[in-house]
Length: 83
Image 1 (tube, helix red, strand yellow):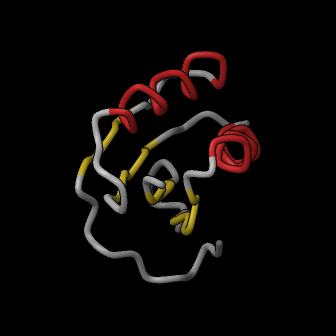
Image 2 (cartoon, rainbow, N blue to C red; image 1 turned 90 degrees about the vertical axis):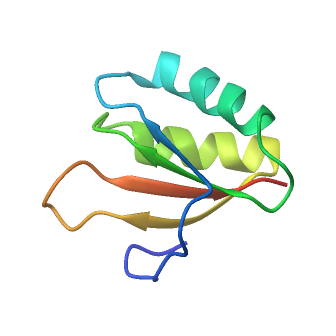
């Protein structure tokens, strides 16, 4: 997982701006359940704890957090691949 790696187009996008980590991971989990294995979910979050919280959720669930885009021009974007 790197900040600079190019990311493929997402199959689904989740705009979670304004959600804190307590509500963010359940929302991400619900969206992932709607996806097929191998599909990519883009999560947009402005929560400052999202980086560590989403990385921990990824390790616990086995859904790969394979890229983070954070160029400072907007909220960071997190990319997950459904297991």
